[in-house]
Image (cartoon, rainbow, N blue to C red; front, side):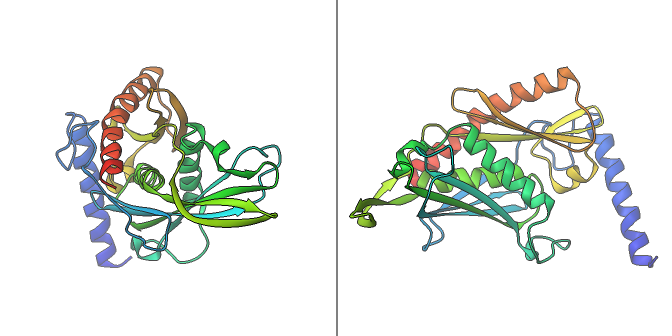
Length: 274
């Protein structure tokens, strides 16, 4: 083992020890409270060729999402609904450990969590994206790209995808003589509610919100919970091998609802200014 690697391991160990000592006193390395999130910065309409787009910055984490619209046949059994598909990609430049190639299992999980939060909250009224029932529907693609990994990719990706959909302008289409015609007009995404995901991690006995990469490196487990505007829990994803007590889950539910309302206010301002 090289001297540099030995030095890095010693630094990492000391950093983790420092973090765990602070958490025992309800403190964090960056000075935040246990359930305090990093400031959220959202910029919209940053990709000219997309129907909608947003870039979210949370600490060192930076994510961009783009919305593209096409037409397709509806899925079997869902003939009266349009199509929504979310995907995620970690760009090679996102961290020193990212590699080019097809999405790994972490990127696949990330896309599924973002998709599930939007889908299960019924954010988009997919019944309004039908051109000819059973034959032609709108297909809405939401592509998330990770520009920099600084922790809590689930929430940053969710906020980027939701912001891109909230501010997207879809082409108004109609069918004439069996062909799809673009009217040249635009319409907003048919939105029913604004889903907000909140990710919390357990490190020892401490429950923290919006974990950084350093905190994720030592966490025992995490829970990502998505709520709708009425405070209903719509989707939950558990990660890591550590378990949570019933009391910890109750605490996470309460925090997800409270923080969800705070972050939803930020997203609404994005819509008003976008």
